[in-house]
Length: 237
Ligand code: APR
Image (cartoon, rainbow, N blue to C red; front, top):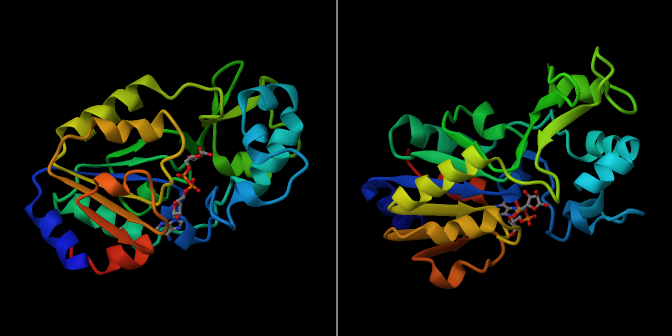
């Protein structure tokens, strides 16, 4: 199976990667919907509710308590999947990474052209004056993180009920439309509009590398059910 993947990558003129939380599980960050995922852990309030705009506005302190505890994995390091994707980009074999993840691990591995559909924990802005703050600042803050101007500092991550960034969305769709190979990995393809973007793909090779099956498996040219880090470690960049 990885021989076929290698052949596709080597012969492709334009390859785009589309990933999700499953790419970071081998870095120690749980995904959302697997049995050990965040959304299957027991909370008084479901995490999908906590990670919504309404909850952020009405229960801001509780939002940040959960966010610091569960969404800020600043200790995590890139794994073999992140590293190989960065090498493929460096060698001109990958045009861009489109990710639903907010952990910044693709950039930490050296990827330059990364489209973060759901934003990043590494960007945080005062809602009053726009001043920017680091993820470390948020992690070390207590209660509701406040700006020097006293405004609330909001992470630049797309919460439920919030729109995706228009420029990022348009850039991702354009990249997918231009690609002749789309590699989808580490995502259940259940959250829209992100998951809907893959239907703009019209190229030759649709590749799925995922531990569990996904709705796109049936239309893929190559499906590898396995761990992304392990699969990518067998690929020559
Ligand atoms: N290798 C390959 N696939 C993996 C691995 C791994 N090491 N670990 C997990 N997976 C797969 C799982 O089988 C699952 O199909 O990754 C997928 C993760 O799916 P989700 O947990 O639903 O994560 P994701 O698809 O990224 O969620 C999309 O939901 O809550 C929102 O904003 C959040 O960006 C997130 C979005």
